[in-house]
Length: 54
Length: 363
Image 1 (cartoon, rainbow over the protein chains, first blue to last red):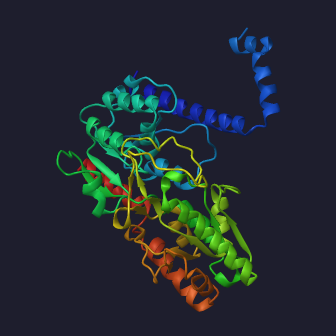
Image 2: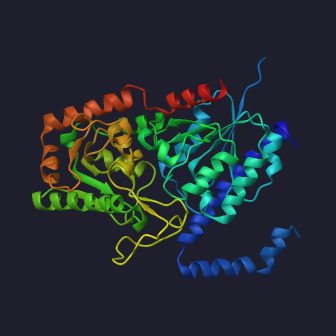
C-alpha cells in the first residue's frame, strides 16, 4: 500500500487514535464506581456479540 | 508539475486530553506552514514501520513528545523502529524538550537516527557541553519552546488591551514540580506563593495555584491572562542534569525533605543551569499582561526592564515589582512594548520559524 491509499489509511489511523485518546482520558478521570460499571458492561456477551457483528 | 514535498511529523500522545495549546501547536503548526503535504504519525499506538518506508517522506520531524519516548524501554524501541524505517534520502529534524533528562539516550538517538538538524531550546553557551562538536553529525539551531500562532493572536485580541480595566491583580499557575527539577522547580512554586501573598496584603484579587490544582488548558489560560493585570513567572528549566535517565520516571514530590538526587545526576549551578523561555511568556505578551519575572535571559526574546519587570532570584523585590503593575502608565507602556516585540514584529511566529527550518533542511 502506498500513495493515496496509504495516506488515507494513516489519516484514518490518526482520527481513530485521537478518538481513543479522548476516551482513555475520560476513562481515567471517571470515578472508580463508574469504571467498575463500564468494565462490567464491556464483558457482557450481548456487547461482545455486537462487536463481532453477529 | 514539480512534486510537492512530504513532511512526516512523528509524535507520541496518549491518555491525556485536552492538550495544552502550546503542546498542540508544536506538533500541528507544521501543517499550517509547510509548503507541501504533511502526514502525522502517533507512535504511542501500535504501528508497522513499513508504513513509514512506503510513505517515502522528504523530511521528518521528531517532535518532543516522540523523543520523550526515550524514557521507557518500549518507547525507545519504537523510536529505533521508526528511525530504521525511514528512507535514506529523508532529511531528519529533532526538536526535543527537557534535554536534561535522559541526555545519554537523546544523544545516542541523534546519532543512530542520522538526524540532520537539532532544534534545541538550550542557549548556545551550553551546546558544546550537551552536544559535543566532536562526532556530531548534525547542525544545531536554537528553537523556542513555543511560538506565536495566528489563533493565539486572534484569541488575544478579544481581551481588553486596557490593563486598568482587568479585574484580577495577579495570576499564576504552576504544576507540582518534581524534585528532579532542583532549585528551578522550587522557584516555580515560590514565585506564585509570593505573588499571592502580595495580593492578600494589598487587598487585591489574585488567582494563583501552585500545586497543579485548577489546571487550565486551551483558551481558558489565555482568558485568565486576559483578565489579569499581572502574571508572575520564571524561566522554564532545571537545576539537575540526568544523563543516565534515572529521573525521567521519578514522581518524587518536591516536598519530600529527604529526597537526594541519585549519584548519576549532575547539579547545574549558575551559568550551566538549563533555562529557557516558556510558552506562557509569549502568551502573556500576546494578551498584554504585565509580566513580573525572575531575571533571566528568556532565550534572548524578552529583555528585563523593557518587556518584563525583573525580580531578583531571592524574590526580595517582588512586592516593589508587583506594585509597578498598578502604575497604569508604566505598566501599559511595558505591555505595549512586549506586544510590539513578540507579536507585531512577526519574528517569533510559527510561520516564520517553519519557513526558516524548511529552507535550511530542504535547500
